[in-house]
Every structure is written in C-alpha cells, then in structure tokens.
Image (cartoon, rainbow, N blue to C red; front, top):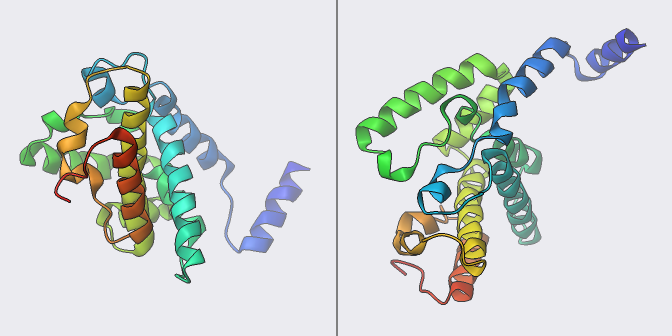
Length: 204
C-alpha cells in the first residue's frame, strides 16, 4: 500500500519522493520546539516562546500579508511565502537563537556562513532554494517573510508588555525592528502596533 502511494506521488509530481529525507528533515528541525528565543530570556521573560512558535507566528503574519496584497491586486506566490516562513530559522535548530547584542559585523558574517552550511546539510535542494531566497531578500515573497518576522516579534513584545513580563523598552526605539521592506500592509501593521503600545514608530 505505501509503495503504491509513493509511486502515485511520483507519477503526479514527476520527481521521486524520499521518505527517509522527510524523516531526516523533521528530526533535524525538531529542536526548534525546545529552543527559546533568547532575546526574550535576556530581558527577563520566562518562560518565553520557542523558535518553532516564532516560526509559526511568522507564517501566520505572512499569510495575512499575502491576503492583503492579493486584495490590492498584487500577484504573490502564497505557498512559497509559507515555505519561507516555516524554514527561515531552520539553522537555529543547531545554533540556537543568537541575540542581537552579540551580532557584531564579524559575528553576522560568521553566522551567515555557518547557517548556510547547516542549511545545505539538513534541507532538501528545493527547501534550500527557498531558504536562500528569503536570506537574499531576492523577491517580494522573501521581503514579505522578512517583514512578517519583525511584525511577529513586535506583536510578541507588545503582548509580553501587556502581560507585565520583561524589560522590553529597547525593542521600541530600534528602527530596524519596524522595517517594512517596501511591503505597504506591513507598514500599516507596524503603525497599529506602535499605537497600541502608546509609542511612536522610531524614525517615523
């Protein structure tokens, strides 16, 4: 039965399905469920969201940005956006979440090389292409995910503050945390987040 299903998949999609690779990728990324977002820990939020929870939140935000862009007539590959959102932090299954205060230009360069090596090791060629695209911000889909990454983070900062958890004031003064990357709906969301927090958008 399983063999016939596999052959049916291959006949429909024109390429072999590797069930072993599916298991390998899921196991390789499984640590994301347990690894915390260390930026929250450093600011006293305990417990805090995991990297996997963050990726789910980014996918949720990205999905809604796609809907908003499509409503305005923009052609967007929504499936590709969701693939990017799911995979955008994949190497952190090995490295953990390196917080921003540690990211000097030298560390950023070294981390990029390390993360690309990890991605090449654990992802399939199709998944790697998606990861490289979002890293390079080389398409509107990639920019949607990068903007969604920041939106999810700032909504989480808003949520933690509303719960009285952590010292998060520095999140609200960093313009990089409000980068919309030319995605108009993202800009509107950032403005709404700042309004709810009773703060201005930095640099705005």
